[in-house]
Amino acid sequence: MIKNKYFGFLLLFLAIITLILLSYYKEQGIKIQPSYQTSSMQNLHLIHRENDKIKWELLAREAIFPKGKEEIFLKSLELKIKQSPEIYLTSGNGVYEAEKGNITLNESVEMNIRNATFTVNTIKWDNASGLLTTEDRVSFSGKDFLIEGTGLAASMKQQKIRILKNVKATFYLS
View 1 (cartoon, rainbow, N blue to C red):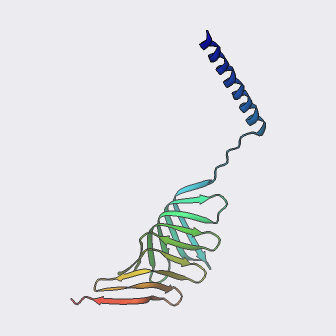
View 2: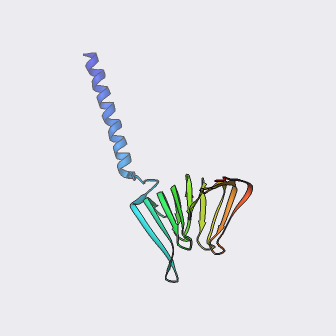
């Protein structure tokens, strides 16, 4: 009999606590706000034109658009800079700044020009100035040469590419 009284008091106590908690939260209302809202898109293809000419094209397997941000996060992307010769960059991921048109490529970037390949960890495309830049280690290779160094500045207007520091060149004789 005593056990039943304790059990009854325990049930009554839990019921009262539950009612108090429910009335407290009912008055305040519970709002769940996600801290990171996004939209995404598969197979993004963006073409940037200036003076009715295509300046560059951006392709990405996936694009993530965070709410309220001007940046678009890209996965598995390609950037084609349309000039003579065409410059073709590939990367595992990157960021597109929608307002400025700048693109940062990250994660094993490969840049192909004619029959030569540049390899860097990250590189930034500045749309306004037409510059590709990095401060990372750079490897430039072709059929008969390998040039390595640190930092790169490539001007599309002047059609010049410079490895900035610690340049080491190896040429292979056939």
